[in-house]
Length: 338
Image 1 (tube, helix red, strand yellow):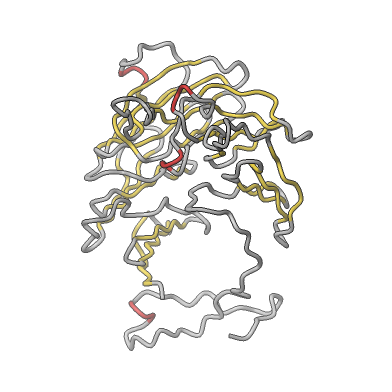
Image 2 (tube, helix red, strand yellow):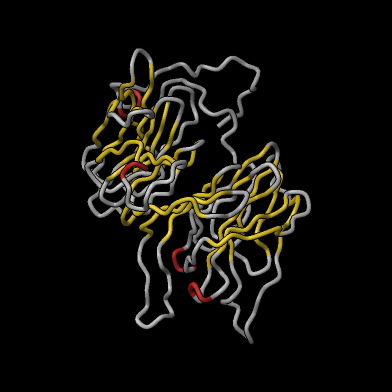
């Protein structure tokens, strides 16, 4: 495909309203498409990894599950390594399992980078903290207890801002007799500055990461319950007063919701994409996919908003759903990938 001069006019306003682009199913419209479409750079992350890269200015932060390297900072344009954040491995004899690995997406705050550990040895071991890495020195300034996440889980979710640290919690003590291990069931909120626990709320088994915005957190569970929880307020651990609103989806919601100025978006395992009013939790619209995959653990990816007034979501069968806001939110295009 020839490279298009970025300064030349592009024919990118040609619609794609039908399967393969037009009634003739030619798969061609005359639109220029992406300007380059080439891989800029690649960087190895190791293992099966759910931690997401975080972009700040011209820097990309990548979590590392290594015994010594815990975080990489690479150049956005080239992928060249700018800095490697490390810690000292803690070994017991010839055993490396006691050393914590970083298992979360990095959280970039003003003075610190926050990451959550995972590892082995259960809650009697040392792999059970949120670490605060100094952005200037690269050293770990302090840790707060977040409960152990066994390394076999592959990911230790964490969200935070300057006021709050929020994370899912359950008991992972696989070396106990009998072993104790279950999906995440509770959401815990702590004060970022002091590390003190603010509350602990049981939402049931869930694989959806929490989404933190200001003083509220959005999270969903395997039963299809989507919650908006208020972080301030001294309510009891089982008090429904903490729930700002809740919504019942038609299937498990096993991916993180997406939020914008007005709406909350997510997909359920029954093949439905939802848009809710952010303030009230009321349904704005929904779209039902045809023939959802019945065996999918996660029917959809997290919805992605990369184009103004558009969202997209990927399904295991390689479909993307695009919705656009012209006069109102409607489903406009379904594209088959590949």
